[in-house]
Length: 464
Image 1 (cartoon, helix red, strand yellow):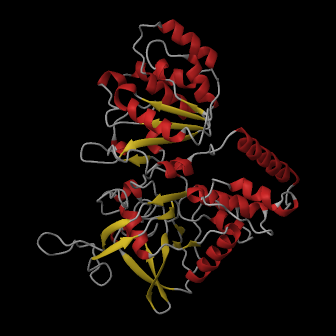
Image 2 (image 1 turned 135 degrees about the vertical axis):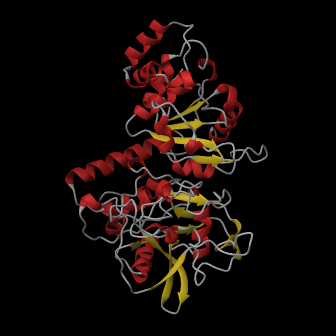
Image 3 (image 1 turned 60 degrees about the horizontal axis):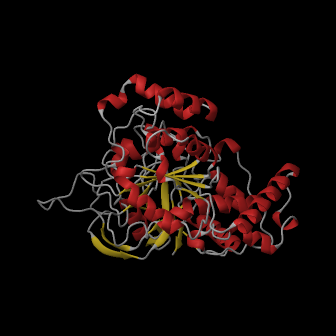
């Protein structure tokens, strides 16, 4: 039996065993012999080999059912929490000794150990796969023991319990999120070789990509990494920093399945509007049909912008959303990025932006993107400290919406690729200096295309 695997699938046998096996079957053709899936080790004495697999994997897929993380009050006792924290953080040798000390009859929650172990792995790519939110289930609001509560900070992939479509619709999104790439040993060997070449270039510094790679190797770097497996065609003049920035942008794109919705603010039952609705901008509602597309889960950052545009910037600001960019500047940026990658990047249309902010085919039904409480999802005038915040979920208290998209309410306002009037474009989302009415998913504002504003940035889109 292998001791290391690229992908570790964690699940609770009583609640999601069938789902886990189904997903494993869907992934197996693309990741042959690289998936750890061992149902026999989830009862009795916890097998130390599973800890070895978690400690060595690249992707940790946590498949949850609606009752997978239901805990009794005794599970929150300090001594229980301390035990699981120890089992999560100790060495493999210490783990084996502790399990032997506890004995085969000990009441041990194996899934809790797996989650805790994964959370302690620095740099491990953790992806919770959870049911869609409903009146009876909301993953982000479940009460969890403190040793595993951190799992709620990771961007989840949401699935429907419909047996006819179970997981099939999320597999492309899931693969796009994973660090393990489809293919066999030959492909992985090629990718490892590319990584080593990139690292060697970094050590000598400042060497452009065309001096170290052929065009074939450039394409190999990103085969199956692009959106939905779309092949890339790096331009010959692409620099190392441009390629790295483009890869970072692509890895942070979210798939939005097409559908229809009512755009704009909804009337109350008595025919009135809420007081935060701007009657000149946010109404009336209209039905919109949106085709499937990809959108950035974060706003474009300072680092991404300047690496693509070969500009200079302060490294301490790299993860902040880029601002002071006009609509015209944004069009120049997407043009350069599109030429680099052979993908048609663009600003999202206003209809697409609101559709994604609402949750697409998984609508949150909330006033702000992901919550009715702005403090849960948005940096705005009341909590931002008068500044933008990093586009990084692991260092932010803010939650995403149901599509795993962040900051569509607040942080910085975002240009849309839709004209408001001649020479004027639509801006959406509100920003760190906004009042709550500007954060709503339906609020829209006009801004002259040549204006550069310190609270306005952008988010990228690509057609499916």
